[in-house]
Amino acid sequence: MVLPSYKGSTLRGGFGHAFRRVVCALRNKECADCLLRGRCVYAYVFETPPPEGAKMMSKYTSAPHPFVIEPPPETRRGYTPDDEMDFGLILIGRAVDYLPYFVYAFDELGRIGLGRDRAGFELVDVVCNGESIYDAGARTLGRHDSSDLNISFPAAAGPVPEPLTLRFLTPARIVYSGRLTLDLEFHVLVRNLLRRLSLLSYFHCDAEPADWDFKEIIRKAESVRVKSRSLRWHDWERYSARQKTRMKMGGFVGEATFEGDTGPFMDLVRAGEVLHVGKGTAFGLGRFMIVQDL
Image (cartoon, rainbow, N blue to C red; front, side, top):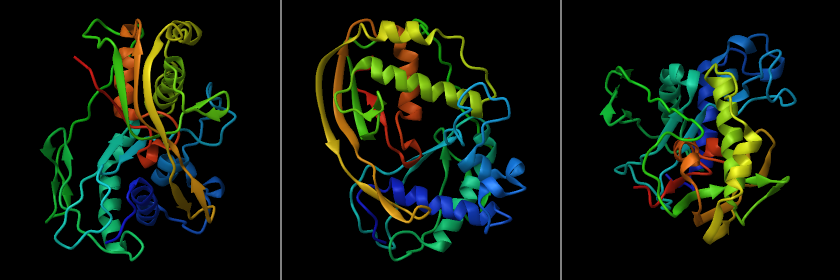
């Protein structure tokens, strides 16, 4: 098997193809024109329509995807039949109920094949919260428990790293004033986290928008300063089968350190560690970690 050095696009593209093959009853129709759209798992996962009368995002055709694929950090490209590859999958809100569909789709992808030569693979194990929940021989899932993210502003009392250093592990495509940014400011990060978390909560967790004063939160975030930045731009491309073209998906990686009163924002930042930030999160982009978390 030969894969790109960054495998997020390959995993996401192959998974999407396999998922549609597994669950779609009318494969020759686009979701927007399909009579079954309102009851279809594929349409919910990939084309989540804003509900009628939606209070948020009504001008868009679909909501943020309720999943994140975290590709392996390794940059190796060649795999032999004796090799194993681990990757992560995060499901959000109602998507947790569809875990069997996700697992079955990755199992099906192994039969379809992955990479430029469509090399096959076998799904060996699925681990949730440190416990194996998949019987590869019987191809069945055991009991699994999801985790809760409780987010508040200001954050509940707890240890606060000072200063706060974030390491961006995969390219972060963070937009501010209509443009991708490289010189990350703390308030720009907070703006993007607020938007992502509130939309995920509204569309996938059946929750009303949080009772937060976004303007006040951003105003306070603007008082947190950049102490140091060592961010660099990382360019990569993916091929879009739907648009039949190659698309640039560059973003920044590296570290940024902030100083000031970051305590009230730590719930947002820690949620971002799990759910990523910016554009392209379904491909694993925008993954970061707190370096000096006590």
